[in-house]
Amino acid sequence: MKTDTAPAHASLTPSAWVRRWSHLVPAQGSVLDVACGHGRHAYWFHQRNHPLTLVDRAQEAIDSIAIPAASCEAVVADIENGLWPFSGRQFDAVVVTNYLWRPLLPTLLASLAPGGVLIYETFAQGNETVGKPSRPDFLLRPGELLEVCHGLRVVAFEDGFQQGPDRFTQRIAAVRELLSPGTVPRHLIDQRTG
Image (cartoon, rainbow, N blue to C red; front, side, top):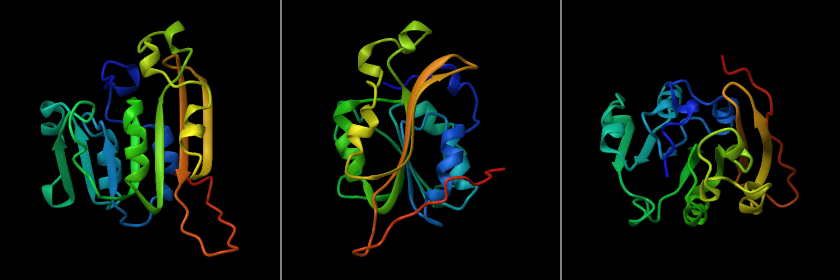
């Protein structure tokens, strides 16, 4: 379920979490924005010259995104009840915010190319005490993203309460490593995103 009514989706300003970890996406790497809404993250990555693939179930949301078709593949699809429209494809980044459909999680991980990054942020248990969404189906359990990403290298993880607007969130930045034997991976963890 897309939670477009959530306060965090009130503008086209990209999530601070996505901005913070977007430097992990390889230069000109392909980005899949899942449940993209009106494209707040699509615009962010487009400005950084990443080819984009967007998916949302709302035609109106997809139609509102003004990015040239040459650099943006936009797909209207019901990814909860229909077929995954990107079967067999992999991306250098998979970005998901304010969306949770647990049966899709393995598919999202399979869509991550070697060396690619998953940037995921959504609502967590506890949010029912401060607002919507409040159904357990749409709230991550404590540490759930860590469990989901057990085969990836976790670069950052947070699970807690945020103010302004009040909400409980869980978020992760995790990389599918592309390593030579004996290599110790390291990622820049603090970069100004201006």
